[in-house]
Length: 244
Image (cartoon, rainbow, N blue to C red):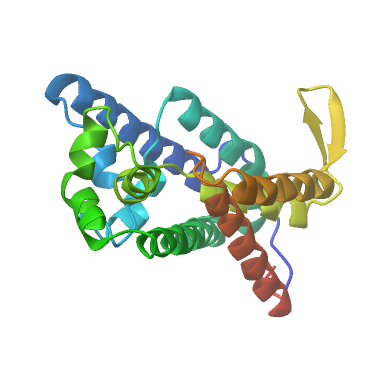
């Protein structure tokens, strides 16, 4: 399949709209917090289904929520930096499909890992301790407290700490850039050149290492890996069918 030539856009349509939507969600979060003392992250962030705070729409909504200015800036900058060439090459429809599939794939792998941690903890705890966390844990976290018992403390974070951010989809975009433009040079700190394929490989290994060695971290390393994994399979599927 041959791609029709397109004029190159520095701010393609899908990326532009994704940046606008993420920006609107971020501003709404700030306004709701400062004006009404409502943390939208508690409603639109992603909880595991075992949590009483879980809602099905969170599987989508968490992708547009961010925990701070640097969080949203780094994600949107990476989306633009690596996604620009992809959307120009693929067109808006295919790029949007890729972005959503990798974002959802990241969420599913992340939830799978959290569920494994959840059941491992529950099997070590008494039913009364688990019930206590499910009943009161959210209130403790909102007031800046947590349980003294390490198992209850970890379980409380698993159940009542939401995951937010577009990082899973952005890592999928990063993986795609490395596969589609493997020899394109990326300049780290604007000084040190490295080919995209090596940059992606190193980043993937880094995320895998941190996913296993930094369990309990507030960074969703397996969500990042999920975005890369689903991105890899989707590109391979398109290549087998000669769609790209």
